Image 1 (tube, rainbow, N blue to C red):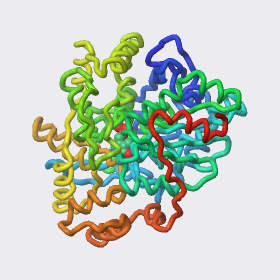
Image 2: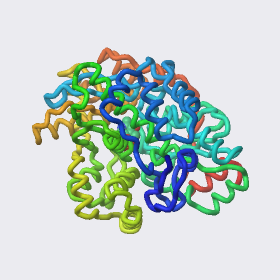
Image 3: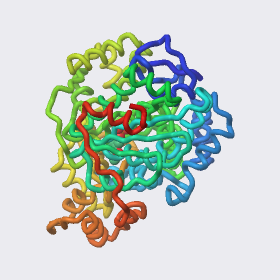
Image 4: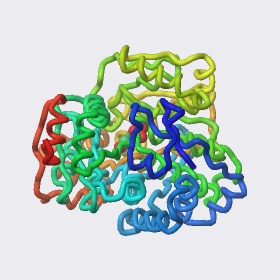
Length: 501
Ligand SMILES: *Cc1c(COP(=O)(O)O)cnc(C)c1O
């Protein structure tokens, strides 16, 4: 199976090239030329296996230039029970949300307690194999822009992986204290972390610019290095996410909650549009899905896009209690647009150009009609997020994080507005302990302690829930990274970090 760029149909690369390179030269994203399709019978077969077996089958069908052994090795190492606390890396809790028993898909049992681990535990395996296949002995330099969770998950995934270096940029005031601590204390000899004085979009744009800067690229080439990306623009990030939607469906069938073939809905707290896009690809591959419910916080650019067909980033940027969704440019939407226009790279390139130059674009009526037939959007501000955490905790005895709460609320709005009670998989994307101050203040009227760990401990004693081991272990970890820079100093800091300026 080969891959095209969303902005240039003449670009054709293998899976290994797509993963090693991360992004296409002209700025487009790599997409598979066709998707595998599974009949209900084949989905029934998936239901008989465990998570790893499902991952091997699905990923194998996309990574046709990898051997079965390479895929098997990667999957077994990534989803080992030591990393995810059990043999099921993505367990389901059944919780009543908006009056409907819903399947809460907990994607945060990995080493950094956010759903990014589902992809970033396996990406280093896929990436190092891809680099070997495509450019032999080069060292891969992974640049990451993060709104908090990707950075730590990528650092953890790539920590001391031979033949790689990783550099992470995060907005100095745009991450939670726990997220900052997780990154600042990262171990490993090939890692570095930098706070930038700007927001996530600045960080992301800065990284994209460095990627496509011909001078910097040449410097790297001279030093036998090449850039790659661990952001969700990398196909190797998206692909592993398709797996858990199939897996959740199988669990629902196995638990007797639905019949094989019955449609489900999917609700996802969305930022860069990677997670929800993976569920869309799963549907295109045969998974019975009716509606995709796209949940945003106050940065509701996607809510507006889905209802009007106009994407307009020229608006106030809110720093919210769900920081991993504080995004105004949702990169992966480009892949959806490519698919909805039946692969019209010219059209997509035009819209992306307008977005870059004017900050907005409007899709044509046909694309808009396709979009709204499948997607519905909604948003939830901080106050409602906290209220939702409190209600679900009090009524259901289920403690959720701020991002998941946004999805819960938007899903409840959807049920109220439509009466659609189709069984829904709601993606739960982080442990409540990553955002303990916001979560604690939602479920308790007590004054918050000043110290992050006192807050974590109080949340645990108040709610009788366990502090995830990886977060507990950070309490006494050494802080290694405290540097800050301006956005326009990012290229310099990369070259300096690599020792090639
Ligand atoms: C990254 C992240 C999101 C947003 O996911 P996208 O794939 O960017 O849409 C939501 N919640 C949490 C906790 C995250 O870390």
